[in-house]
Amino acid sequence: MAKGDSKKPKAKVSAYAFFVQTCREEHKKKNTKVPANFVEGSKKCSEWWKTMSGKEKSKFDEMAKTDKVRYDLEMKDDGPAKEGKKKDPTAPKWPPSGFFLFCSEFCPKIKSTNPGISIGDVAKKLSEMWNNLSDNEKQPYSNKAVKLKKYEKNVADCKSKGKFDSANGPAKVARKKVEQEDEEEGEIEGEGAEDE
Image: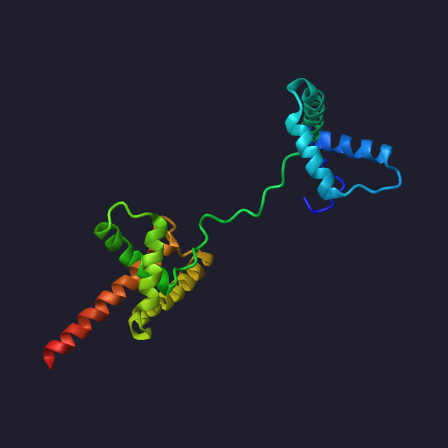
């Protein structure tokens, strides 16, 4: 619910919070002219709470249990929690960037050469490798990412027109199509080299 919503139930209060509230009320009664210093008061309350016996704390525990019952009832009366905006599971996924395409290619290689490496260390290595690449070396990954974006858009268009096979999923279809084109381009370039 929105911040400051008057319909929202007041949050449940812990035993310690009830204790602090009691400390502040007692301070106000004793020192009507001197306002309580929040930091000093909090420190003193914390020290008192730590030195209190379980029997002394039980009064505040009961207050917290009672407040929890109140909170649970109010939450039940408040109705079901509003669910966030649900994402369409059939909606096309955003295609990966050039960096993520690079990572998907080199991640298995790093893991195989460094067994037992943590995920964080793999990510660091991949990031270092990517940053050390020249713009020319990054270009194939960026080009592939651009192609995937185009195919994602085409898949989304087809889907909106009802001409889409959802069994394969948009990301799979787009990625396979780009990979096929890359293979075809590689074959064509290879043939051209043989002719020379």
